[in-house]
Length: 417
Image (cartoon, rainbow, N blue to C red):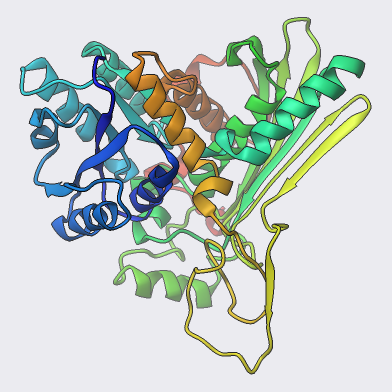
């Protein structure tokens, strides 16, 4: 494209959109022009944030996606709306462009690309049908500790003694912000779908040799386990019911709050590689914990976001209201607490959005794109299939492309077995 700056519009005005907007302070040549949300109030709130922090002087709320596409100042869209709106959002984008309502250079999409493979494939097809560049917003593969760690491990360790062969990744916290996340049919599952998507792609990224495509690793099997350890207990089912106005009933229709998987890969030379992932919504600690471990013949690497360079301590005489000013999903306001000084940077949002903006401005498809989002969805569906059938799923498996997990159908209940 010939423009020197990229005007972007956000679809969705909630928590994750505000995270992206905050990260843009450190991204050049981009302006937030608009925000469209299911509720006008949330769109106006996010647009006001963009104006306040100086990343969108004229940012405003729009009534429809088509209105944003019709605005010549908007060149690309960031899709950050709920999972259950994914198909209708991309259908409107494709329709607006194909009928001449406006033009775009590209579109990005938050995880997951779809609630299942059927939806993820549809999102990719709709995007390509109107010739848009596409970027999959998987922030953790852009985290500075991950990208720098990979660079060092591969340039020093792997170059000397051989490639890494084992990656362990975990994401754990006390549960999502919004009630719809807890609804399997709306979200597409539970913690496996919500958070293992990060761990699976981050680990795959770490095991991929620099300069080679992610497809250089071939997945050959997936085994997984899911359960509901905390949130099906009566005292916690009441919390979820109260927070959703009585809609969420985990006593009868829960989603998994714990999941683990083991994925086996082969590299180009037929060497076995292993990825272990663990995710939970029942972690009780200071707040959100992201961890990554990487092992090779004579080396290892460790990342834990709750081991930051800043910590504070408050005695029991220091009191205050609940908040998340120290770390996302903060669970306490006293004692020893880690502080994530800049979450947008540490979690990878800044580098992620810098890459997407630079790619769109130069007319190149981002390195992390919808093909990656589709592959992650396939691996997650294989994990659900393994957990339901109680056996290892050998890959490739054509049944995965039409598989809908029981939890996403509202038919999963570990206490009802």
